[in-house]
Length: 609
Picture 1 (tube, rainbow, N blue to C red):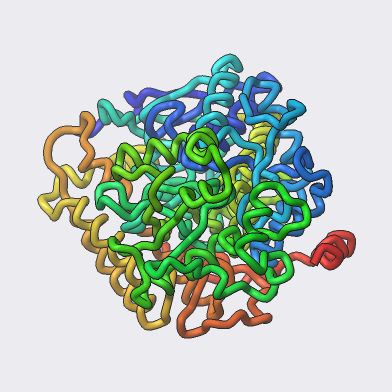
Picture 2: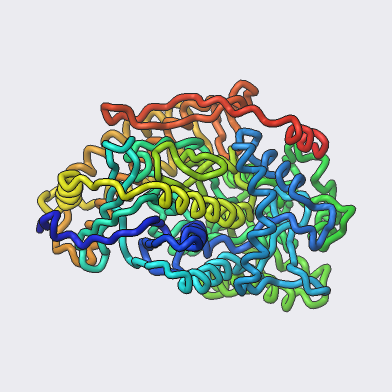
């Protein structure tokens, strides 16, 4: 089954972008603008990326609906949502540049919903003080991908579909910079070598490490794992966002996302007693921004400038924990969730059915087709689902370059902007802002450097290791992934304890041993079992990073909730946790002090708080 290194199909580019979601497409478009050669690798098909699951909108302080909104308020909201352990420079750049990136999308053909006077309409969303999310009904991610794809294919970008990267290649003789990647095409199983002067990782998230997730099969932490094993550092890996509203029934669709836009349009959360339980627990730092009564909350969703947000639009980490509390107390729905009710607005609007179908067309069809529920007449059953990771590759805020020369990252696989919790809608503006920056600086790096030297022996050894599962008769890799997902869901999930996470570390060690012995049958041509065996390395790597960082953070902050340390500890607001690979190949964790925030940014936060 082996191939001689000289026979590998080889492709050469100035910039190689790995991942073709929103961040990867935006990076590729920007990198191509100065005329450098750009290659774009898709794990699946172009246009099919997890970005389409970001349905609610793009957060950008344009002030179209409420002129009081501006970048300073967006910056303050982002820092508050992240519990102030964000990279303040990334949060600043994001808030400042997001409006321009949305204008860019509009110029490239994105069709947004409109205000009465023709401007881009913006909706309310959790954690945002003012209506801020530019949107296309509840299909914003799909429109973003369509726009970037249609624009990108005219920029001379070479697209490689259904290709998965096995390892990044480095030139140890030139400071350890990345010089290429070894990959295989999923259809035929043949290895390929990509030579590049700079590489941008934009591979998305890690949801497939958990049993219940909104992520599709591609979300196996590839970028995180590739970067880590190439010598890059990971940061904030303890912070996993469990989106509060995923489908819970029927079992075949459990975890599929239910957009926050439902709550932004007036949807409310109820327990099996019919009570809006979110009013029971409003955090002190959001008390002055949260409605006192259901009536005030409704007025907020309808654009009343004097009303405050309903508690259903508090930050995702808090809403998810409140839902878990209701379920554990026996006040959950029939199938183990709670009820999300948008149908109730018929008490307020005479044309409620048509209004819901117009504002939430995807949600209407999703529940009608998958669950047999008409959301204009019935409440939905929802529960938390693994949705997003705030942690990822540690990058420079301005350039998006990692700690490995020539290796850049953007979107969900990069980290810093979100801190302990991401606000809804910030993911799409994040990937636009930092995808653009990563592409720009990767192209500059490529123009300033010559092609590095690829070590043929390193390529041959990586290919040999990738083929080892065919030579073994061990257990099925699907069983190992299944056991990993159950363990992470049970032991390193929404509520965490030291004893359980120590048990998870021991379990991960055993799973690594099993993964090293797993075997596959058949040939290399589109062999999903083989693909899963190769995915296990990255899944196990990121699971270890999540667990080790969560153990070290002995407090509850944002998405990290420790049952044994339920309070926030001011000492832990002074640093982030960083994971890296030592010379012996072991994962290490350290505290990295937060960079001091400039006084002018501190003043913004103080004044708005």
